[in-house]
Image (tube, rainbow, N blue to C red):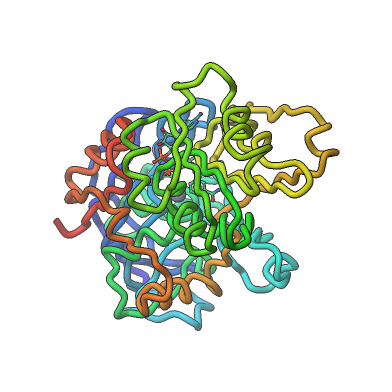
Length: 379
Ligand code: NAD
Ligand code: ZN
């Protein structure tokens, strides 16, 4: 059983919206059912930015953000039997205990024990943090906190993957791309030849576009307010584009007119409640299905007329694209390696910076430049 404390470099967010500071952080050993990971590559997802900005979200500082990553198990705590030092893993923000009714259900990935909790900043085992600076505890984020050379996570929050998989690429499967891909193929489930609208063309939305292409959707309509994203989306398979700013009418009406009454499916990947409403209202009556993926503000309310449901439209939502992290993600990685999924992860990776320049990744995302920025922990 490991009992030594590590002193490592970690990017600490001391205050909302202020640049992260690389500090020497003490990382405690893993406790019962926990593992300590050496992070090799991590990427920035918009969910990190929302909680770092803390506008419309519960502020919790100081905190170590980061949840999209790939790493190697350094040591395991008591009771951990299915992982050992050296295993390659992807940490995941929503876990799988494998024992609760959700984990046993084929339909759910909302584990009772380890489901996403954005307001918790401590480990569930003892409600304490494993990080500290000069004795002052630093909060965790999403149970992963990957902006650190080493981190401690619950064993149910990692997917063990093939050690031959290139971690510098497959790390993006630990959140954004899997979320978008799963939102389409597992939740929206377009049939071959159907039409789909994807709101928000960041990495999550383009993961959803990729899913639509794999499912054989005929028309893939990308919706974004950033014109550079619309151009980029063509490379991922978008066939048509709508920029809501180019129209006086509500975007749902524009889409309904383009598609003779509405799209068969829609997936929202923006976090804007207005886009969520549009994504629901643009699906065809009688059979249309809309799926919400974006993380809303704490006080957002979704408002639509009930007649939109009576006329047989369906609204769904999902975390992590309905994938069970431990059971499903190793297979997604396998399929990527065998080229069975036309995933082309390199297209999502538009930037790469050493850990010392992590704040650049925030700048890129705030400016809407590129898709995913990989942060290399070893320079
Ligand atoms: P991103 O910032 O790279 O992309 C979001 C895109 O949405 C941007 O291109 C932006 O221009 C566009 N957008 C914003 N408001 C819009 C509007 N009203 N209409 C049309 N387009 C609009 O972010 P990302 O990393 O791809 O994440 C997308 C969303 O998914 C975020 O809300 C993130 O928090 C969320 N997310 C959810 C899950 C989940 O499991 N449900 C997982 C990961 C990320
Ligand atoms: Zn994410």
